[in-house]
Length: 402
Image (cartoon, rainbow, N blue to C red; front, side, top):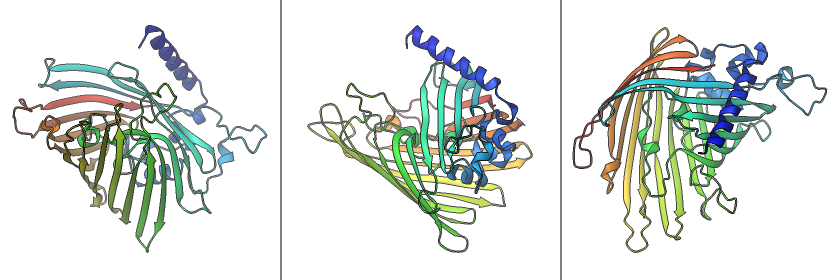
């Protein structure tokens, strides 16, 4: 990135932060908590992890049920214009001290590791936007991440919703942005094909329908069309998609009280610049079980197949893969949350991508929006030619949102 572009983004960031700092207290940030004068714990087990009410709030288009949207708007004398008195902005920042043995640098002060600007609000009843700008990640400006419109209850007040824009493919299963650990969800971020396709950000049009099937039994159905090539820049023809195909994914979810079981499937095909094709799928079940009122056990297992991940025009070579993640979230004491995360990824024919880790994390909330965390990740994979060294890591750091 040129120095001129860097200066532009820095000045833009400073202007946004200055604007946020001068907004009225009633509509200051964090955007949603300040808008309703509610504590973060109403929607979060401990930020950024949502509780049941927070999930319902997000699924309802970032508004309370039967809310009078005009009550929050500026008095402009036009019923077809809803403007909040101040721009709803929030900032999330993360800083860490990291110890590791898999690189020449064994200890590192990663401060800041991440700075993110977040904005979201209704444009009218049942229509909202959500936007995140990754202002700094690993010392570089990353750009726009989430950016979508959300249309809630689009047909006769049925729970039929549409989301259009860019967001993560697995948000409807386990959102990476809501995890409590520094350690990521390995299989989601693994690039199995040479195109770099991953189960992360893409440009998507998604529809969902939720309904009650019985007294305590709820069902949810999702379907979506996807560009399938991530969120890179447009080409010279101003096309974001790199080929003439669209990928598709879907999910079904059954919930009984706080117990949930779902199934996710993704089907895609892609051509490279030489018009060589790779067809692939990812599919598998997921679950979230709540025990003893606040002890949550959750997990996801996916199998995958790519028929030509190397885009060979002469001898295509199929690659099978599977991935598993599982976790425990337990608020074991006031202001303390224990998190355990297990990751396993297996890519047959590309063993360098294999990984198996176990992570333990303890987060202490100094304030509702300010936590300190301590985390250890153990490498469970046996050493081999493709994995010559175990890569245990330790992390301590601060995460805050304001």
